[in-house]
Image 1 (cartoon, one colour):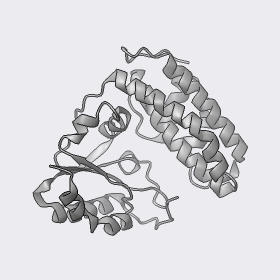
Image 2: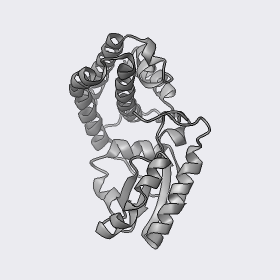
Image 3: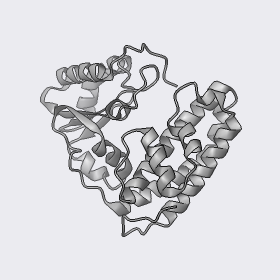
Length: 252
């Protein structure tokens, strides 16, 4: 779990400082950098959220990674715990494998420096549908063991629910896109639209994806698990009804 941080923490300032340090380390090999995730969407929580930055490089090999190695501690202090590192060609080569991740970045990001490879990025509906199904089924399969490992205490259950909720929100956003809906900017919006479009229980989904840190700790772990199982079951039903050749789905 991300450690507690000052409420005065500014993710855009932190991201800008990280980009400047990366420019110094890489020079012209750094083509661009974008801010995405909660800091770009408005869901950022100063005490808990990480800062998501994607860096695009001319190439990404041992020389570039060696140049970046000294920045690890600097990135971590700015809460950039897992920066997305892409070479000039790796985005195109991986688009068919990670269409959901790239869709979410495309729909909500801010350019920090240089080129923006995500603007106008084309996402194949069939490939997106397949990844959403794989992701939902993996979440369903992993739900039990992560619950057993993490949900032994109220704080552990809250952490488990936060992790599960983040993954479910991403999949739900992909399904909404396939249904012809705009990708929600915030988790609260995702919960509301998903409940309306697919017949998922709105309060159960909100508890998993949109409630504030600390609120989940007041909810019984078993109730959170039951909600997650029910939501995943319904979303899998929805994705099973999708035509791989079409981006249109029927409502709940």
